[in-house]
Image 1 (cartoon, rainbow, N blue to C red):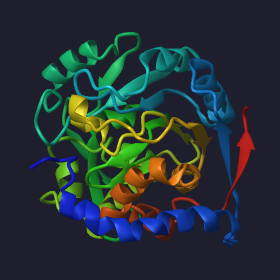
Image 2: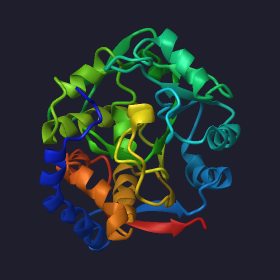
Image 3: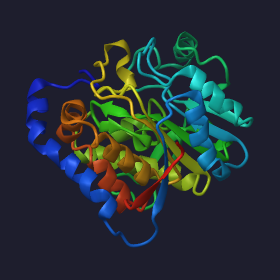
Image 4: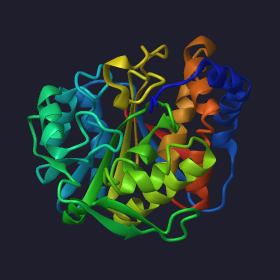
Length: 317
Protein backbone atom coordinates (compact mmCIF):
# COMPACT_ATOMS: atom_id res chain seq x y z
CA UNK A 1 0.00 0.00 0.00
CA UNK A 2 1.02 3.66 -0.38
CA UNK A 3 2.07 4.81 3.06
CA UNK A 4 1.52 8.48 2.42
CA UNK A 5 -1.08 8.30 -0.36
CA UNK A 6 -4.70 9.41 -0.36
CA UNK A 7 -7.71 7.98 -2.17
CA UNK A 8 -10.19 10.30 -3.87
CA UNK A 9 -13.03 8.80 -1.85
CA UNK A 10 -11.27 9.55 1.45
CA UNK A 11 -10.40 13.05 0.26
CA UNK A 12 -14.03 13.84 -0.60
CA UNK A 13 -15.26 12.32 2.64
CA UNK A 14 -12.96 14.57 4.61
CA UNK A 15 -14.00 17.82 2.92
CA UNK A 16 -17.05 18.49 5.09
CA UNK A 17 -15.02 18.02 8.24
CA UNK A 18 -12.22 20.27 7.05
CA UNK A 19 -14.05 23.39 8.21
CA UNK A 20 -13.39 22.29 11.78
CA UNK A 21 -9.72 23.15 11.34
CA UNK A 22 -10.56 26.75 10.53
CA UNK A 23 -12.79 26.81 13.62
CA UNK A 24 -9.83 25.64 15.70
CA UNK A 25 -7.82 28.49 14.18
CA UNK A 26 -10.45 31.02 15.21
CA UNK A 27 -11.02 29.71 18.71
CA UNK A 28 -7.72 28.34 19.97
CA UNK A 29 -6.16 31.61 21.08
CA UNK A 30 -9.25 32.57 23.11
CA UNK A 31 -9.45 29.30 25.03
CA UNK A 32 -8.60 29.98 28.66
CA UNK A 33 -7.10 26.73 29.78
CA UNK A 34 -6.07 26.14 33.35
CA UNK A 35 -2.39 26.51 34.08
CA UNK A 36 0.37 28.11 32.11
CA UNK A 37 0.45 29.85 28.76
CA UNK A 38 3.11 28.67 26.32
CA UNK A 39 5.29 31.01 24.31
CA UNK A 40 5.63 30.33 20.60
CA UNK A 41 8.28 32.33 18.77
CA UNK A 42 7.52 33.25 15.17
CA UNK A 43 9.52 34.52 12.23
CA UNK A 44 8.53 34.98 8.61
CA UNK A 45 12.19 34.92 7.59
CA UNK A 46 12.55 31.66 5.69
CA UNK A 47 16.32 31.80 5.55
CA UNK A 48 19.27 30.33 7.39
CA UNK A 49 19.26 33.48 9.51
CA UNK A 50 15.59 33.01 10.35
CA UNK A 51 16.19 29.43 11.43
CA UNK A 52 19.11 30.48 13.61
CA UNK A 53 16.94 33.19 15.20
CA UNK A 54 14.31 30.56 15.99
CA UNK A 55 16.99 28.35 17.52
CA UNK A 56 18.32 31.16 19.70
CA UNK A 57 14.84 31.77 21.11
CA UNK A 58 14.88 28.31 22.73
CA UNK A 59 18.61 27.58 22.93
CA UNK A 60 18.89 28.05 26.69
CA UNK A 61 16.92 24.80 27.02
CA UNK A 62 19.85 22.64 25.93
CA UNK A 63 22.57 21.11 28.06
CA UNK A 64 25.30 18.64 27.22
CA UNK A 65 25.18 16.58 24.05
CA UNK A 66 22.31 17.60 21.78
CA UNK A 67 20.37 15.32 19.43
CA UNK A 68 18.91 17.25 16.49
CA UNK A 69 16.02 15.12 15.25
CA UNK A 70 14.99 15.88 11.69
CA UNK A 71 13.60 14.05 8.67
CA UNK A 72 16.51 13.65 6.25
CA UNK A 73 14.18 12.43 3.49
CA UNK A 74 13.98 9.89 0.74
CA UNK A 75 16.47 10.29 -2.13
CA UNK A 76 16.14 13.65 -3.90
CA UNK A 77 13.03 14.62 -1.94
CA UNK A 78 12.01 18.11 -3.11
CA UNK A 79 10.56 19.36 0.17
CA UNK A 80 13.10 18.46 2.86
CA UNK A 81 14.71 21.25 4.83
CA UNK A 82 17.45 23.15 2.97
CA UNK A 83 20.78 21.73 4.02
CA UNK A 84 22.47 25.13 4.11
CA UNK A 85 19.91 26.29 6.69
CA UNK A 86 20.49 23.25 8.87
CA UNK A 87 24.25 23.67 8.54
CA UNK A 88 23.95 27.21 9.89
CA UNK A 89 21.89 25.90 12.81
CA UNK A 90 24.35 23.11 13.58
CA UNK A 91 27.19 25.64 13.62
CA UNK A 92 25.43 27.28 16.58
CA UNK A 93 25.41 23.98 18.50
CA UNK A 94 28.94 22.59 18.76
CA UNK A 95 27.79 19.55 20.77
CA UNK A 96 24.97 18.64 18.36
CA UNK A 97 24.52 15.51 16.27
CA UNK A 98 21.81 14.96 13.66
CA UNK A 99 19.85 11.85 14.59
CA UNK A 100 17.62 9.61 12.48
CA UNK A 101 16.13 6.11 12.53
CA UNK A 102 15.56 3.48 9.89
CA UNK A 103 12.17 3.05 8.27
CA UNK A 104 9.66 0.24 8.71
CA UNK A 105 8.22 0.45 5.21
CA UNK A 106 11.29 -0.69 3.29
CA UNK A 107 13.16 1.24 0.63
CA UNK A 108 16.58 2.87 0.76
CA UNK A 109 16.33 3.94 4.41
CA UNK A 110 15.21 0.61 5.91
CA UNK A 111 18.76 -0.56 6.69
CA UNK A 112 21.60 1.55 8.02
CA UNK A 113 24.03 0.89 5.16
CA UNK A 114 21.67 2.10 2.44
CA UNK A 115 20.31 4.78 4.74
CA UNK A 116 23.81 6.26 4.91
CA UNK A 117 23.98 6.28 1.11
CA UNK A 118 20.74 8.28 1.06
CA UNK A 119 22.16 10.73 3.58
CA UNK A 120 25.03 11.43 1.18
CA UNK A 121 22.65 11.69 -1.79
CA UNK A 122 20.58 14.29 0.02
CA UNK A 123 23.56 16.35 1.15
CA UNK A 124 23.65 15.53 4.87
CA UNK A 125 27.45 15.50 4.85
CA UNK A 126 28.29 18.62 6.87
CA UNK A 127 27.67 17.14 10.34
CA UNK A 128 27.72 13.75 12.04
CA UNK A 129 24.52 11.72 11.63
CA UNK A 130 23.68 9.04 14.17
CA UNK A 131 21.24 6.37 12.98
CA UNK A 132 19.80 5.72 16.41
CA UNK A 133 18.67 2.14 15.80
CA UNK A 134 21.76 1.01 13.90
CA UNK A 135 22.47 -1.27 16.86
CA UNK A 136 18.87 -2.06 17.71
CA UNK A 137 16.31 -0.60 20.05
CA UNK A 138 15.61 0.00 23.72
CA UNK A 139 12.14 -0.03 25.31
CA UNK A 140 11.25 3.24 27.00
CA UNK A 141 8.30 3.46 29.42
CA UNK A 142 5.26 5.62 28.72
CA UNK A 143 3.74 7.21 31.81
CA UNK A 144 -0.04 7.16 31.50
CA UNK A 145 -0.08 6.00 27.89
CA UNK A 146 -3.61 5.48 26.59
CA UNK A 147 -2.71 2.60 24.24
CA UNK A 148 0.98 1.83 24.75
CA UNK A 149 2.86 1.24 27.98
CA UNK A 150 6.29 1.35 26.33
CA UNK A 151 7.83 2.04 22.94
CA UNK A 152 11.11 0.84 21.46
CA UNK A 153 13.36 3.75 20.54
CA UNK A 154 16.73 3.65 18.82
CA UNK A 155 19.24 2.42 21.39
CA UNK A 156 21.63 5.31 20.76
CA UNK A 157 19.09 7.84 22.04
CA UNK A 158 20.40 7.26 25.56
CA UNK A 159 23.65 8.92 24.49
CA UNK A 160 22.11 12.40 24.41
CA UNK A 161 21.37 14.91 27.15
CA UNK A 162 19.05 17.23 25.20
CA UNK A 163 17.00 17.23 22.01
CA UNK A 164 16.04 19.75 19.35
CA UNK A 165 13.09 18.52 17.30
CA UNK A 166 13.57 20.27 13.94
CA UNK A 167 10.51 19.61 11.81
CA UNK A 168 9.37 20.31 8.28
CA UNK A 169 5.66 20.93 8.90
CA UNK A 170 3.49 19.43 6.16
CA UNK A 171 0.62 17.04 5.50
CA UNK A 172 0.89 13.33 6.12
CA UNK A 173 -0.87 10.37 4.55
CA UNK A 174 -1.56 8.59 7.83
CA UNK A 175 -1.32 11.26 10.52
CA UNK A 176 -3.05 14.07 8.60
CA UNK A 177 -0.19 16.41 9.33
CA UNK A 178 3.43 15.91 10.24
CA UNK A 179 4.53 18.24 12.98
CA UNK A 180 6.78 17.99 16.00
CA UNK A 181 4.81 15.09 17.48
CA UNK A 182 5.19 12.90 14.41
CA UNK A 183 8.89 13.76 14.17
CA UNK A 184 9.70 12.90 17.78
CA UNK A 185 7.38 9.86 18.05
CA UNK A 186 7.74 7.86 14.85
CA UNK A 187 11.05 9.57 14.17
CA UNK A 188 12.74 8.23 17.30
CA UNK A 189 11.10 4.80 17.24
CA UNK A 190 13.33 1.99 16.01
CA UNK A 191 12.57 0.87 12.48
CA UNK A 192 11.83 -2.77 13.12
CA UNK A 193 10.24 -2.70 16.58
CA UNK A 194 9.14 0.76 17.64
CA UNK A 195 7.51 1.85 14.41
CA UNK A 196 5.64 -1.46 14.23
CA UNK A 197 4.40 -0.89 17.79
CA UNK A 198 2.97 2.47 16.74
CA UNK A 199 1.57 1.51 13.33
CA UNK A 200 0.15 -1.93 14.21
CA UNK A 201 -0.86 -2.97 10.70
CA UNK A 202 -0.90 0.49 9.10
CA UNK A 203 -4.43 1.31 10.26
CA UNK A 204 -5.44 4.95 10.01
CA UNK A 205 -7.51 6.87 12.49
CA UNK A 206 -7.60 7.97 16.13
CA UNK A 207 -6.13 4.78 17.61
CA UNK A 208 -2.97 5.16 15.51
CA UNK A 209 -2.66 8.83 16.42
CA UNK A 210 -3.11 8.06 20.12
CA UNK A 211 -0.33 5.48 19.92
CA UNK A 212 1.81 8.09 18.21
CA UNK A 213 1.17 10.53 21.05
CA UNK A 214 1.99 7.84 23.60
CA UNK A 215 5.32 7.22 21.87
CA UNK A 216 6.05 10.92 21.75
CA UNK A 217 5.43 11.20 25.48
CA UNK A 218 8.13 8.61 26.18
CA UNK A 219 10.67 10.86 24.47
CA UNK A 220 9.44 14.21 25.78
CA UNK A 221 9.36 12.86 29.34
CA UNK A 222 12.90 11.51 29.00
CA UNK A 223 14.23 14.91 27.92
CA UNK A 224 11.92 16.89 30.22
CA UNK A 225 13.18 20.47 30.48
CA UNK A 226 15.90 19.81 27.90
CA UNK A 227 13.85 19.57 24.70
CA UNK A 228 12.62 22.23 22.27
CA UNK A 229 10.75 22.26 18.98
CA UNK A 230 11.08 24.17 15.72
CA UNK A 231 8.47 23.81 12.96
CA UNK A 232 9.37 25.12 9.50
CA UNK A 233 6.22 25.93 7.49
CA UNK A 234 7.70 25.78 4.02
CA UNK A 235 6.96 23.60 0.97
CA UNK A 236 3.86 22.28 2.75
CA UNK A 237 2.80 19.41 0.54
CA UNK A 238 -0.12 17.25 1.66
CA UNK A 239 2.42 14.41 1.59
CA UNK A 240 5.18 13.55 4.02
CA UNK A 241 8.84 13.63 3.06
CA UNK A 242 8.67 9.81 3.13
CA UNK A 243 7.08 10.00 -0.33
CA UNK A 244 10.23 11.48 -1.84
CA UNK A 245 9.93 12.71 -5.40
CA UNK A 246 6.29 11.54 -5.66
CA UNK A 247 5.06 14.10 -3.11
CA UNK A 248 2.28 16.35 -4.35
CA UNK A 249 3.32 19.87 -5.24
CA UNK A 250 2.43 22.27 -2.41
CA UNK A 251 -0.54 24.57 -2.99
CA UNK A 252 -0.08 26.58 0.19
CA UNK A 253 2.38 29.43 0.23
CA UNK A 254 5.40 29.30 2.52
CA UNK A 255 4.73 30.95 5.88
CA UNK A 256 7.69 30.96 8.23
CA UNK A 257 9.16 29.29 11.30
CA UNK A 258 7.78 28.63 14.79
CA UNK A 259 9.75 27.63 17.90
CA UNK A 260 8.69 26.66 21.40
CA UNK A 261 9.51 24.47 24.36
CA UNK A 262 5.88 23.24 24.27
CA UNK A 263 5.14 20.51 21.72
CA UNK A 264 1.36 20.91 21.79
CA UNK A 265 1.51 24.68 21.45
CA UNK A 266 3.94 24.63 18.52
CA UNK A 267 1.89 22.08 16.56
CA UNK A 268 -1.37 23.91 17.31
CA UNK A 269 0.18 27.24 16.34
CA UNK A 270 1.27 25.67 13.05
CA UNK A 271 -2.30 24.50 12.35
CA UNK A 272 -3.61 27.95 13.28
CA UNK A 273 -1.14 29.67 10.95
CA UNK A 274 -2.17 27.46 8.05
CA UNK A 275 -5.76 28.43 8.90
CA UNK A 276 -4.97 32.07 8.06
CA UNK A 277 -4.24 31.25 4.42
CA UNK A 278 -6.78 31.96 1.66
CA UNK A 279 -9.28 29.08 1.33
CA UNK A 280 -7.91 27.78 -1.97
CA UNK A 281 -4.42 27.48 -0.50
CA UNK A 282 -5.32 25.94 2.82
CA UNK A 283 -8.03 23.57 1.57
CA UNK A 284 -5.77 20.68 0.46
CA UNK A 285 -4.03 20.59 3.85
CA UNK A 286 -7.33 20.98 5.72
CA UNK A 287 -8.88 18.13 3.78
CA UNK A 288 -5.86 15.92 4.36
CA UNK A 289 -5.92 16.63 8.09
CA UNK A 290 -9.67 16.17 8.42
CA UNK A 291 -9.77 12.96 6.39
CA UNK A 292 -7.16 11.40 8.68
CA UNK A 293 -8.64 12.68 11.98
CA UNK A 294 -5.36 14.57 12.30
CA UNK A 295 -6.47 16.89 15.09
CA UNK A 296 -6.64 13.82 17.32
CA UNK A 297 -2.90 14.41 17.74
CA UNK A 298 -3.62 17.63 19.63
CA UNK A 299 -6.32 16.07 21.80
CA UNK A 300 -4.08 13.13 22.66
CA UNK A 301 -1.16 15.36 23.63
CA UNK A 302 -3.45 17.41 25.84
CA UNK A 303 -4.81 14.31 27.60
CA UNK A 304 -1.25 13.14 28.23
CA UNK A 305 -0.32 16.57 29.66
CA UNK A 306 2.45 16.94 27.09
CA UNK A 307 1.72 20.64 26.65
CA UNK A 308 -0.97 23.31 26.60
CA UNK A 309 -3.27 24.75 23.97
CA UNK A 310 -3.11 28.29 25.28
CA UNK A 311 -0.19 30.17 23.77
CA UNK A 312 0.99 33.60 22.83
CA UNK A 313 3.08 34.53 19.81
CA UNK A 314 6.30 36.47 20.22
CA UNK A 315 7.59 37.82 16.93
CA UNK A 316 11.21 37.41 15.92
CA UNK A 317 10.67 39.50 12.79
